[in-house]
Amino acid sequence: MSKPLDYGAALAEIDTIHATKPRKTHPMWRALMNGELNRGQVTTFLRQFGVIPLYNHNYHGPLYVSCPDPVWRKRMAEVVYEEGTGGLYAEGVPHYQLYLTVGKAFGISAEEMYATKYCGGALAFRGWFSNICRKNFVEGYAALSLGAEAQVPGVSGKVSEAMVKHYGLTPQQAAFYTVHEVADSDHSGGSREFLEAFCRTEPDLRRAIDAVRGAVEISWLFYEDIYQMVREQA
Image (tube, rainbow, N blue to C red; front, top):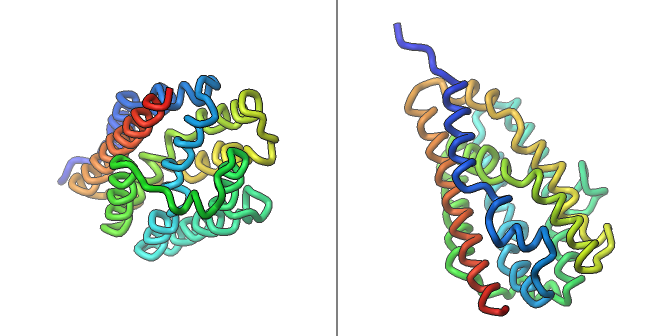
């Protein structure tokens, strides 16, 4: 008989991966949460980070299509619905529109936001996540939900507070970050449930763990590149 899979050990390994490069410790995010950037620097950050919320359909969308389980497909449909319409957490405002509202508060028009020339880290992030989310459901979901989104709660809420306290935004203008403090906590929940449902062999379990590692690494590269741009403006 084959040895039962140790999901507890897998989750512990995933926690260790996150501990090596947590978003909350990166100097880019620390500076943002502490209000240490000037408005020009925040503008640069916002334009580069837009590669995530403005192109989210390339990430969550393919996972809904490829999900092989009808119950989990419903869950993915709810995520896509929320991102595209804001119908669950954002009072009917799509998440991309919430993000454009933050940009507008810093003087960035929607046209300017979409016309951003992305740095290498941003292009790498978009390309890597677009690819893995189309590759297969196991690796795509693990990368996006167990990897990237798992590091949002605990940071996004503090960014929202900083936007109001240090940069003069209203809570409504900073709602993108408030919403994601809650929404990504929901999106990234159920890690063990996911592993038990879709990783029933050692190779599948290893692919999921490796996808989380890749997500953490590419995200850190993304932050590093933006931070370099921001420091050049100091």
